[in-house]
Image 1: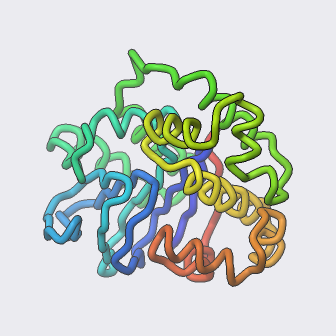
Image 2: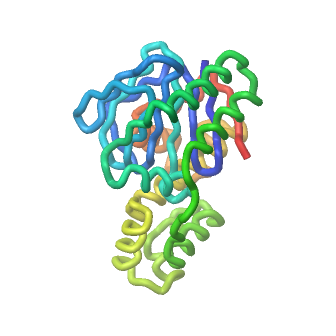
Length: 250
């Protein structure tokens, strides 16, 4: 059972065979069990819970052990990512209170029982509704300029260089790199790699092969994409897409 879901620049999975090596990445990650507590290792600490957010750049290890679980990888520049960062307050993880967990698990169990795209999408929207999106501070206009350039960029490597963004924003490379990290929590160089990975995921969602997705996203080869994905998620790209259904939530 594998459902891969895309909501903007956030990617999710419902599966009973999630298994990731010990790793860290520049994404925020939510884990949710369908019923009983699970064990997850975060920053060397073994934690038992039903729902947790793991912060960026935080080593963690998770194995679904055959039980249905939900996980979400959230881009820190998205609205959801910014809300999650605010909830974490720079701590390595945040465990959801029971009242929130029960609501999410009920929606999750309904999605598992119905096994329809409609109930899965409804469940994802239920997850999104658990967070307060009010009083969000906008990014600096120059950071917004970089994000806009990435959203609309050609996939050639020259359009993913700090030098290019520096010229477009009128800031020195070092000042722009510092500002972007300060505002988003992720180094600009790392974010450009994440951006290329997102392009590849989008291509896979549209039915392209790993080879086509890798080259179209600006990776040197399919093996380069596979390596980057493994480093970012702790999982094999081939295993992620094997026997999976792909859904988009708008």
